[in-house]
Image 1 (tube, rainbow, N blue to C red):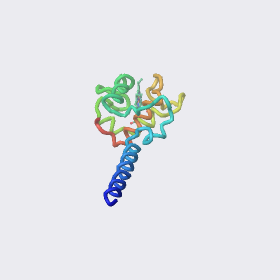
Image 2 (image 1 turned 45 degrees about the vertical axis):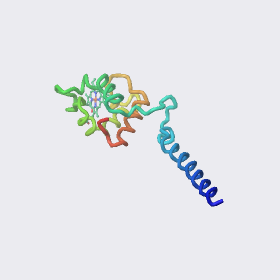
Image 3 (image 1 turned 135 degrees about the vertical axis):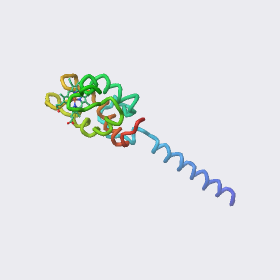
Image 4 (image 1 turned 90 degrees about the horizontal axis):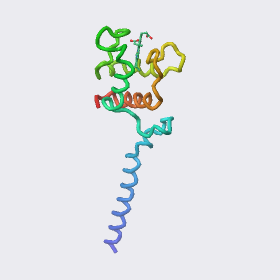
Length: 126
Ligand code: HEC
């Protein structure tokens, strides 16, 4: 009888441990506020998700040789240092004169959300 209650205590503990660990590992529960349903995973890896759109849509003007506004976006350190200002410029509504990329098509919401999550993570060089 004593052993049986030990087994019961142990098994109910492991059920509890399993259910809580599943909850905290669930990405969608952590990032529920993402508005775009099609954006399952926030695009928040610097090298895999962020640098490619910066290279394609920003570096033509913000390169390392005489960059517009003195803003060189070719390195992780420079992007991290200007992250708040970049988020502000890429999040502006269409038609706003300060929207970046200047003269290009606005970034899709998934990339903007990913950039915002990357800032929340502490702008890692990931
Ligand atoms: C066609 C050229 C061009 C492209 C492409 C471009 N920019 Fe710009 N950017 C400018 C110019 C010119 C300015 C200065 C005028 C202004 O502040 O709007 C500027 C200013 C900025 C500023 C403000 C800098 C400061 O210190 O105040 C940020 C941030 C910025 N751009 C980010 C970006 C990002 C991010 C992209 C890519 C998504 C991008 N830009 C693409 C031309 C460009």
